[in-house]
Image (cartoon, rainbow, N blue to C red; front, side, top):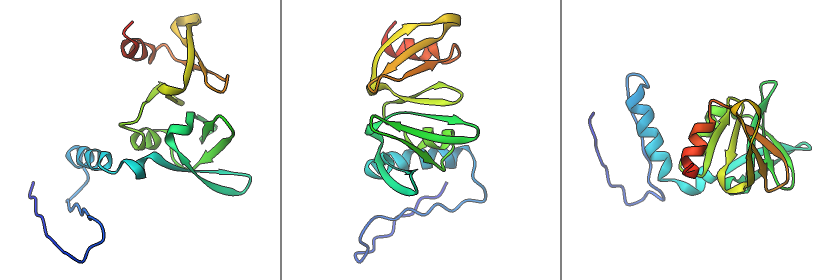
Length: 149
């Protein structure tokens, strides 16, 4: 990898340009690291509701899930639809307190009110808004580890 820095006093903000023959694992890791340096931008998401687009702070999100190939963002006040896929949301929210709860859901760790074991090794989360979200058996060990259980 070749790294160059060019100082241009007239620039209003820092610009990063990555040139590569193809996007590979190293490039993806570099992009993930760079996105962590831009916390305000990564904390803002857009969601649609009633024909309007809203700017949402990710700290206001309780959870996100996918139903019928459509992704929804849940806050205490409303539900918004986004064009982002769940894996794209997961990437955007890396570094925030979100974790994968199932193949179709991401949960804001800070918005969990309570949790209890459920049938089949799942964990039932009660969110700040009172809604129930289930952590699948596959992802339950990661949550337990995070909780120190």
